[in-house]
Structure formats: structure tokens, C-alpha cells
Image (cartoon, rainbow, N blue to C red; front, side):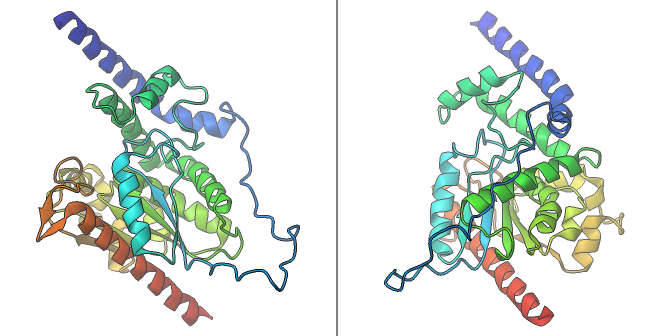
Length: 331
């Protein structure tokens, strides 16, 4: 048994070292075209379709805004949702019936390709992880989380982050169009980031706004975010956190741009301009028991999951209403 454990530990250390070294290379490789051609996002075909007939039923009302969910570091692809994320999104859709929610974006690769596809050194490992997705194995989740954490750090790096954000913005636009968004005049976009998805959201937001001409805002819960230029270039940023979230508190110290002493950083300038709001939503932890998506723990008679859904829904509605007021004032 000891020998097996030693091999497991050595495998984990090997993957840790290789992942650390190779983390920026996936972004650079995508930019250089080594991982395949840069495909343009699909465009909505509006002119070639048949004209509506008088007896056709009324089309459904256009959504007031599109919300794109960027999952936490436990994600392995856009299609294979973590069970807790799936429950969260189901309840959030019920809270926001007038909004379209897009969930099939994999945020931890600039190409948006799932881990078990493409030219990756550990593609075989991610295929095993996909087969075991949801299984309570003690090795694969830490390896997956570690790999995705490094991608979050790449997105937060001033050298590689712009490339990463540009790549993800194309992936997000592609999935938006595939889900009915009109690339020109499709209305407001809200990037909803969980954990590391918060950093991915602020990295991609400026490029997505430039590509669509639409106001792009960010709502994050437990979001790990640096003082990225996207913080000042998004319409609004609402960062929800739990008072017991040690990961969120760590991010405040890990990224110097968030320190109050650096008054000219993107983070502090956005706070002074009231474009960035941090809000404590209760004694929630980052993940697991007592976390944001825990449906068993409760506070003041409300489960943590329902509390998160309520606060996220309220933040998104506030962003939509403020964006609508801004548009009316500009017109």
C-alpha cells in the first residue's frame, strides 16, 4: 500500500511541475496557431430564413440580457457540468425567466476546447477524469483543480492575460450566437464567474464588448480576481463573497493591485468610481460543506445554495436595470 501511495505522490508532483512549466504555453500555442486554426465565431443568419407568415404564432419575447456562466476550477468541459453547478443554474433560471443563460463555455483554455481533446500532454488523463467525473476519487480532483488554477494565473498575468482574454471572448461570442444572440445589437451581456471564472470573466470582458458593441458587465461569487484592466473596462463588476471564504480573502493579498496602498491600480480606481462593488452575502465558505452551492448547510433558515441563487439573481437584475437606465440617458 505504501508503494502505491508513493507512486501516486510522485505522479502528482510530476504533473504539478509539468503543469507549472506548461501553463502559459497553451495560451501562446493557441495564439501561434499550433493548436489549430482560429475559427471565426458562427454568425446568426437572419436574412436567408423564411419570412414569417401571418398565421404563425407570436415569437417569444427577446431576453432582456444574456448571462454567460463561467464555472469554477472543477470544470473539465463546457458540456460536462459539475452537478452542483447544474442545480445552481436550474434554480437561477427560475429566478431570472426573462434572461437567457448560456452555460456551455469551458473557461480554462483560450481555445475553449475541453481538456480531453486537442494536442495536450495529459489528454489521456483528462479522458480518464471525464469517465470518472463525479466519482469521489482522491487523486483526480486535486490534479484537475491544480491545472485550472494555473490557467487562472495565466489569465491574471499582464504578459499572457490579454491573449487569454481575447481567445475566451471569441469562444463566448461563439456560444452566445449559437444560443440565439445577435452579434450586432443583441443587448447587454453579463459574465457570471464562479471562483476562478471571475478572473476569466474580467480578462474576456473588454474584448467581448469591443466585438459586440454591447455593454458587458461581470457578476462573480467567490471570484478570484486580480487588478486586471478588465475591471475598469467592464460596465459594472459586482463581487459577492462569503465572510468565511478563505480563498477570496487570500486573493486580496495575493494580487498586489488590490492592496489599498496602490491607489492608481485598476481595482482601486474602479472602486472609487463605484463601478466595482464587493458585497458580503453571509458566512459562506468557498466550496464543499458550507460553501456557496451547498444545499445542506443553512443560515437564517435558508440553504447556502438558495442564498447564493437569491443574491446572484438580485445582482444580475440590478446590473440589467442600471444598464437599461444608462442606455436611456445616452439616447
